[in-house]
Length: 297
Image 1: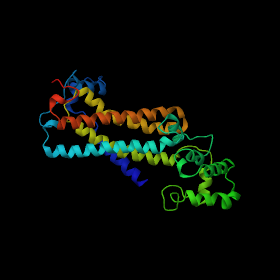
Image 2: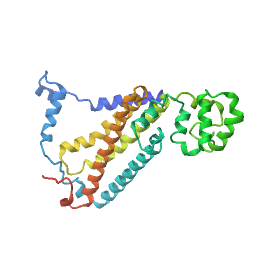
Image 3: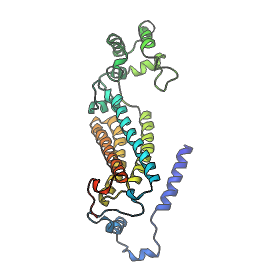
Image 4: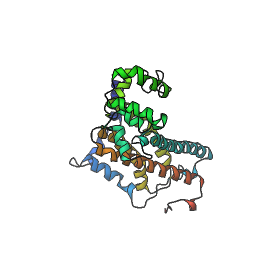
């Protein structure tokens, strides 16, 4: 609660500092003129068609070699990180339905759940399929379908779990400890998808962490020689699609149809980030005649 209050106060201070104020300058504005209309009119001269945003002292092509190397290193690491994130999605959510590749069903099973069976069954038929022989998986699935009876735990289920599961699912791991019957019974319940606590934790990590990546990528791309209208679209797109992506997790938790928005959000910010990264690298290291798209000043 203390952290929340500090964040709330800091937000209020920042908002107060940037909130538009009126002094003598407001006399030039009609009292009936909406604020947002006035704001757009103020910026309209900067949005002329086909205008290239060029500032000779700060364009990527004219940067000192020191900053070119610095920015290139950052962009390359971020690019590799995006690819690793894609692989991680393929290896986790991509196996939720037991089939290779990320599909709508994978997203639905991850957030809404596969409510025709238990989470244990979904994992054994999905991401954990290769971790145990078919007969072992069948025994565990049948135990879950029988509502996880306690009498079968010491004689049948516990030895299987110790042999095939506890090397990862133990007391020292961040994932559930399967040496305890209560934890096994919990995953043997009907699969309700991601919990509210999990969604809250993952959401705030993504919103805080990934937004900083988009901030720095957009800041570097902001020095590119590019059509201003498209530059503004590309810089703002990742933030918009990140919000769409995270909100879709919560909506999918209750309405599976919103799984499509998860696909759209992830694709949208990945595409915009890729365009910005490649454009920045191209303009830093290639001669202007080789740039794409061609820039006409």
